[in-house]
Image (cartoon, rainbow, N blue to C red; front, side):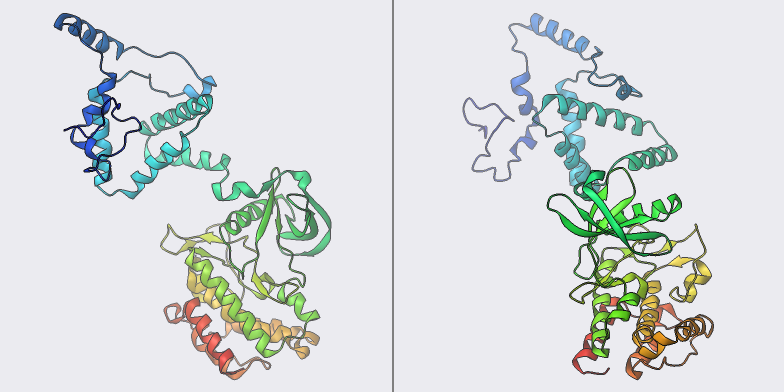
Length: 431
């Protein structure tokens, strides 16, 4: 017995029968989906005539256009299809679903979602564009597809960033707050949706524009209490608005705030928590340092400056730097040799940051800043043979030296373990 109710058109707003809980009974007789579209037949001769007309119609070309003629470049001529072609297509789709191909399911879902529009004109334009793109892809080599993907990616705004774009007039700059190697940070405000004081970051010249754009892309995908949040992106120029960190970076904050050793360990734990999250999202920071850790008005610590941040989810956690030669004490020895960045590179940087923070916050070292520079030079050249910087507690120094700054990258812990150890130090007051 048919699962469809009387006078109900198969495939249209149908409800599953009681014995069809999943609504899949049509799979056994998919031809019923098109029953209402079949022409009624009077006699065999007229049926044959209509079948002949249908065959002829199926080879007629629709020359009508919707939208720009540019969309028709490389477009295959549209043909009418008979029911057998529909059934063959459904069979192919079902086989792909049965193959548990998650990527195929995602593609099908996205196509259905993007064409689910009540506006007929918009829907036709979407169909036209998708069809044009798919036809080009079906007739392209791997290299051509890679080139198409790169060009499309260059003009599309990632979905997770769309809500951040504002008109240029909505982001205003007041005066400079500070400058780094690649950018200048200003005090500013956003007009919409509600006037808000923010920090506005610009590149120092056009050479560094790409770093600001990359920073926006990375930050837009990271939301965590220990990460500086991006609030807006100017639509027509590489400028971003980020949350204001009133005390600036840690180096500047140490000039204004007297940090106790307990304060410092809590800051280190907050940094480890933020880095644990960053790595869980398959990103590397690549420039973790005291200058890139910021303190807000509540004296809470947040990680910022993601200009060199990279996604490594599709490269097994490794990034090969080919643009420049990395340098500095916060770059691990193996990365200096191979130019390969991994999570262990960030862990090494954390060890350097901890020892550096004790020097920065020391009143003696602030008066003799050369002591900090000398320690950094020693750290880079001593191959693990360096003395404890005066203000650093012995427990924390040994942990950094033996674990975070271990010359064997495989012996360095991850940030989950680092966070746990720092919590133990806080709980047991080993500082």
